Length: 159
Length: 428
Image (tube, rainbow over all chains, first blue to last red):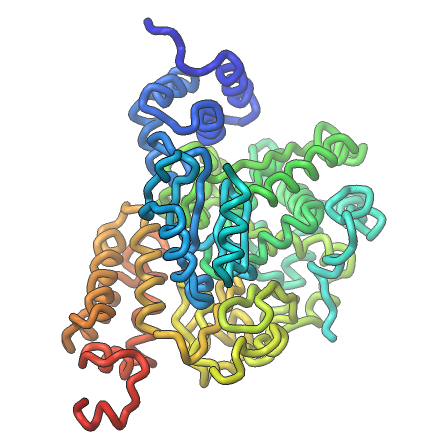
């Protein structure tokens, strides 16, 4: 049997989490977040290991992880840049934000910048509509991004 | 100026802290419920106050609580729906960020009323700041002895846990929320059985929205008559309206249920650009779109249902005459195609199909028969899936075809959105 992929600390935290719920399966989503915290994304192997700890099959864990958009299934950039293009942001010209971000970072939607700094995604409503048009970088909201300067200032905050 | 209830202390510094919250009357209601009221009396009070669910369904909260079996030996759960996902709704976020203890107190009183020993708050994964505030507040409540083995020194014990969602709009549906809480794919269940009988871990469960629960301490403190005197007769209390889009000051504004949409736009500072008047209101992505002529409708659950739409979670995306209704209908439909959990064929197949037709129309490749085709697909979806998402996806489409058919015809005839009629008639 190969050496565990996850650190002893992560494995211990997962085991501890299982005891907090009436049913230990409820620890699955929090466990996947712990894996993502340690490794940057959730791989097939790490999902199998979570399954071992929670007494679930690897297929079961993968089925759950695949349903939720916030678990990265492959390596991503150092920072997640999410641009909202839903209704309220659309009414406040999010299209200009999208084109400025993609042009400035030289990246496509869904892609990662060449220097590994940002993975850029288009997302659904983030519930920050008073700041429309807006983006989030690592879940920190920035808006209203009504000028290119404001967008550049947000991008400059992360390296 | 109407009385503020939930956002009264919005500008009090540090109200997210337990000591400041208590200095402003916080946890008085919980103490009163625990020491002066039986659980059944709390439920009766909330029934009498006619507190209707604020998440969108509008079901009377107290009546939902009363469905739970009374046997004290049974495990019961409270699951707070903090998975706010309706596009344009951001009132739950405000409530959790600025006053997490208000929600916690509401959860605790409700748990006491239904006999739950565990309360869970499932918060959408993207609300990281709100989650931190909530977690800090829960920790404070434990430290003070308000949560745990002996709530406020009484024999009632209650544990509370904040659980993080991971990106899924469908999880906001109550049975999908339960599935997510259990550690499964957030897909809905067949009902019956309803959560009150078989919910979380197949045990009796009450699922309530954040804003609904935040009202509970105020009803306990001030009584049913006080609550009934605010808002509309059949829909009492206030609503925190999330007003966004083409208004001067997009923000959350608390107002009595029944305030008209026209009045709410004024409260949000009026139209963003005075040269561009109101074209339509989207009360989220789900309800039928309200054309401008309906703006004098009172914003309460029943009045909006009467005109064929739905108040929903209180989202109001204001669209002025620069916006293209087809474009917004397309965006809403793409949202549903993306978020459909895939379990039911009408929704899984219908949402992308309708998106593709709308994309063709937007690209100038529409055909006149597409309008009836869209309506036909929508009618084959509405009410034919396990949850309301399939129905929601038909809202913008059926209403835009009904009220903005001319815009469809104009697009399909090859004209851009704002081609004046005279030029169209001249065959330009």
